[in-house]
Image: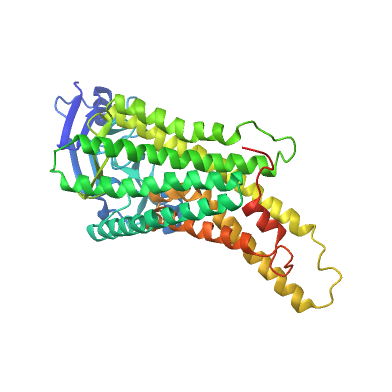
Length: 457
């Protein structure tokens, strides 16, 4: 008996091996076997009990609400010697799935649940391949994709452009504040803040220019200007992340290696890394001609957004460059700086625990007021450092979870220049306070904001 290949739709394919056909008719020596393969909507299947279904599904849903019904011969068979193969085509809108079949409950109401017992799942670039040792109703369970409507896409674009429009000038103002502070207090921490602010200003300004130029170009048109802007935008992003990592490294030296930390030409060496690494990567990518017009497609929709970035003409180059420079590298920076911020919180907690300055006072209202003020200043210090260390980039993981995560990530990262400005104002205010004013001065928070190496550049 020959095998059977059936295509109930263009996106589905069923392969039944000859052994499965023979087992479906039992010992009857039939020449012809009736094979039925069709696709029906998953809404016809009633899940029960709800608690068990939720536990088994784990928040998954049926892929495209499509269920393949397979029936061969005059009886349903399970534990086949060779599995039936079912293929679900996809357009890369999902990255993982689980093959399941419909298992009815013992109740007489026709309810059941999806089970992956006896089904194996394989994944290729364009298809999910299910191998199941039974005849039944089959489906593919996937994580529900995040749907971005045109209204949401427009709102996200407005937030991004308005946020970057604010961040660019505020970053420029912050740069002038840091220059002023550095002339009065030539500290290395302020110098690092200056470098980070320059990179962030370039990032927001180039993003606005690249988005504007890409919108002016025709659908399939590209230009050398877009290539240059894509290179500068990529360089600015790498520079911002690199200087954020160097801020974390500098914080590590201040908090952990407090003694014997003199480094000759310290700022020069940091500058070679902070500006040299992004320049080297951007130059290699530029020579490889990976920059150009890029089209961003929102998942589960036909909406697109154009910008001058890493071009999508070469999928292999786009995948390698994007994964290493915009996924792996930011992940490393965020994890490292998150650890540094954790050390800051621990150091502040240690200083607070060892502070006995209020022990002899009998004015409890004054004590509570001072403690609340210090707690507020500590919180502001931690939040400010989280922005300086680039931790908002870590919220990129929330964009795969929910639409709210996309909004939070977009708002916080588009306003990074504004946050840097607030940090610079806080530093300027902190340094302007008289040191002998004990009611204002706070050694722990102020030290985290203003301390630096007591050595020459």
